[in-house]
Amino acid sequence: MAEARPPVAMVMTTGFEIYQQQLVHGVRQVLAPRGLVLVVNTKNFHGSGLTPSVEHLIRTVSPYGVLMTPCLQADQEKELVSLLEEMEIPTVTIAVRTPGRSYVHGDDLSGMRALMAHLLDECGVRRPAHARGVPHQPDAVIREQVFREELAARGIPVDEDLIFDGEFWHEETYRELRALLNRRRDIDAVVAASDVSALGALKALTDEGLRVPDDVLVTGFDNSPTTLCWPALTTVNPEQPAQGRMAAERLLAEIDGAPPGEEVLVPSRLVVRGSTRRLPPGDPEQVTEVISLAQDAQDQLASRDALWGLAYVLSHCSSPADVADALAEGTLSRLGISRCFLAIFTRVPQFVGTRL
Image (cartoon, rainbow, N blue to C red; front, side, top):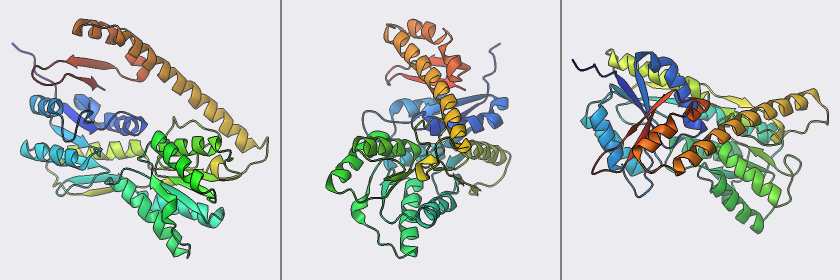
């Protein structure tokens, strides 16, 4: 008698950076007791739209529910939503509003307002630059909107030359900010749409001979635990694990008969650190920040070492069996992955799914 297949829930992400990891951490707390939680990377490396392997996986697994985060491309997002509707799979979205679907998101509006009030009212900023995120994503739209509104509310003109594309990414922010600083250097703050983008800003400012926070203040958004920098980054904590938990709970409620379409707002909070304030040497708060950063650095280096080790082993694999042996060597446990599987399809590109 064939063994019954365990129930599977899917989390559709673009990559598996710290943002997605934090969401999945919350999702697992709710959905893992019910069966498998499969994280699927929807990123299309070779073109636009949904990749055949992702579509094939969804149709083959036929999950009991899906949690969906923003895609990098609007057309990919549209295709994914259409597929899930066609298959009548209960779906809750995180940080992306879709008609007829329940929608969970952090309170970017109040978080960004608190951040701007800190800069404009407490720090006296008057010429801030803004590294905006991916243009079509709601988070990026709201954060730029609030940036503009808070300046206007205080009678400070919005200088369009100081608004540039950061794409939520350090390299893009670094390149664009260096170009801006080559044109002019009269900025007193960089408001980045994400912590990763803020890292690029910090590097660009340092390479241009500017000091943070003495010459220019820098802020991020997301409160990423692996955002290692000095000074420590002022940011907004959108409580991503809580977003994951609430999205998973909403999904289960709809599976049990609750109507879709509810909006769930998760409170955000401002976290002020050294990138927007000056502390005297030896200040106890500064010492605490240094100790915390050192611990975060150790944890991140351990994870990177595990990733590099896994990449090295996989680079010597020449068959699916070799890959399976490499994945079974124990490196994955150091990355917080308890079990994974390798799936190979004919007529479509290969993909690797991870059970978490």
